Image (tube, rainbow, N blue to C red; front, side, top):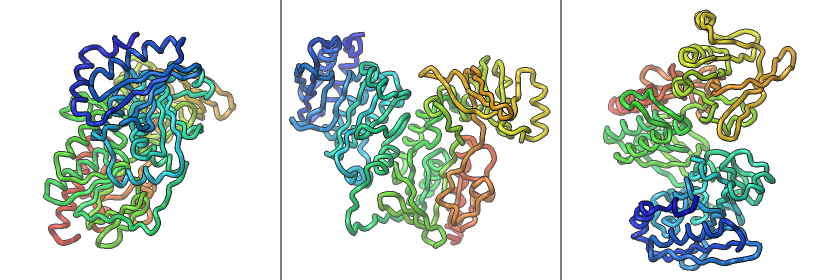
Length: 524
């Protein structure tokens, strides 16, 4: 497929419009070997791309042992951004953004605090991200690391097209993309965002501490922790009451980002996780809410009248009312290629993703209440459902066990330990399961697998101050109040039954209204 086919006139016209306001001279500095079959394609692609603005130029250098690549120069100075390969497909956006951000017009630069953490990373950092041009998670990682290169001159980042450099992929034994390497060592595999990657880099290379730097303190009427459906709902309801609201989150959307199809958000017949996360962010921006993304909690003090939340990087947020909406994560199997196939055969919510497996063969791992409920639900739409239970008895309620026993297409296998997840590179194909009595391992072919070994509430930072259930969920009353005055909790981090988006949104609204009521009554 030639690049002309990729960069048709329509696309070029759109790019012209986007680049009309470029201020800097940006050069695409390319190298290639003459006998490289792809060299012509790269030339054509870059010439087409550069034709969209007077400010863009291309220079080609032919070298005997050169790799097919090009770097971005701004006013003839290195930016640290290189593309090894031809960024077509999903990576075309990464190239567009790299040009806009190099020019300084990008809208997606993180806030000052995150920038100062990026600048504080120690030493010279050489990053490579191996991608596939059809991978939908790759561009987020490429774009985040390109941004870091522009913010910190000691960081260089190269996108590598695994389709062209297959030998390298096999030498490094890369089985999933995006695969990020830092100074030639593996750093990260799979989807990721700026906050996650920054955290991993801080852990790997360390940060220069700035001597005697005072923590930045910010004060609000209400602080919301968590950017999923509950947190966003709580922030919007608080802002609508005219309160000064701050929201800290690792990423907006939270776990929603990992959900593929959503068909049960009432009045929205069809959406997906990425879209819903974007819609939540856009709805937030309609209100004067201060959003602090990519923040990780270091510690909290919740017992005083004015509560404090400390985040990594030295910021402190203070407010008389705190709403905790940090959600929960599905407990994972942590075997084989599980992480790679999440959303591609491995799922955690049968309500969300079960309908995609109509008439297919699926497995459920876990024989507790949630496992059997999922299996019964799935048996209504799937061809066959197999439940794997680790113990020698099912832990589910008798009524569920009786119901399951009446379903002809539902099989239960006990004493079963899942030891491996296998796939064909794009989706899951089989599970390896060990019989715990005979130690014998066997592969079972499936179209999809639903892991139901429980949810783990993200309640760790709060456990010293708040009352938790034995399952580590924050205990709340019907008004979302916790065991401390002025502290509220909502959504999947609490002991409210049924972990669903629509319920979390309702709980977030309740928590905000309770906090407002308590404020009016002078309780907080």
